[in-house]
Image (cartoon, rainbow, N blue to C red; front, side, top):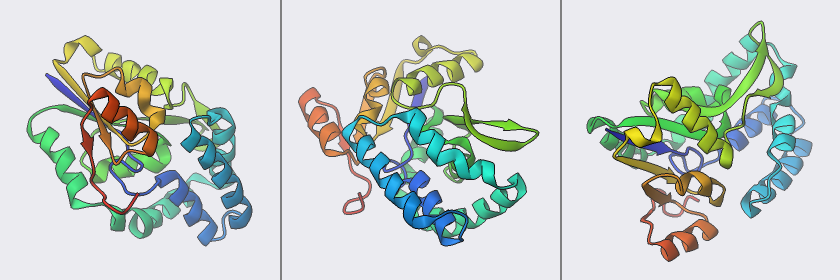
Length: 224
């Protein structure tokens, strides 16, 4: 049995879905766009530099989910998918996922972006299993806090292991494990698998991939 793991933002999508969700909320007037964008860019620079404080970022990024009823958020998300996500799904990314699905590999999306934003995106790629940052809710309404270990850096390894255990599996059950990612922040999981694939990599990951002899895959030339 083989396992194929995929990061999402800038890996299967040529955009950052978390950032696009914030831009969408600003566009419909649900958040202060200028202030949110300024703070979001500061967090993004930390992310690119590999020094993001994930707890501080989640406190900031999840706050809008606690400010509105779930039914309203769900309606907005349907618009978000139609306006911001579906136009950016590329056939070459679908084909990559489909290659693993046709071979009978177990396939999962492993992303730091929260489950509310990413679960519908996983479905449009035909990916049944999602390992993401989970959200706390009370009575179906979001509190604005994460639940459990955020799926970020070493947390991706932890959360993937927990998911495998829930499926009755362990890392050792798989003859090969692929992980496709664009970011230096995913090095803990890239170093855990048998087949790390630097996909649309940032400059740091690209240099490491060349140094270590990892394959480099570019799905979105000119779109990073």
